[in-house]
Image 1 (tube, rainbow, N blue to C red):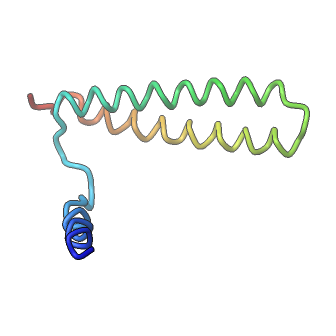
Image 2 (image 1 turned 90 degrees about the horizontal axis):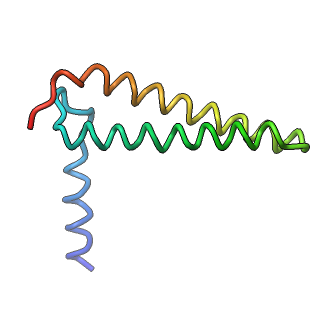
Length: 88
């Protein structure tokens, strides 16, 4: 039990307060994957919103779509800012 608590404390100490100013090529590829995942979620939620008859569900799906659009924009802006600053 004590070993598990030490591992948890050590993991908490490794959390970054903010993203690094430079990202590796591998990190940039992961950001690209995250953009793809969010784009798929945007497309699917938009499709379901258009075909939904229940207004409450339609509003919930619209909120999901907006959330993924926001995430997409944040990730895209971060990736664009750091695309020329990658290191290998």
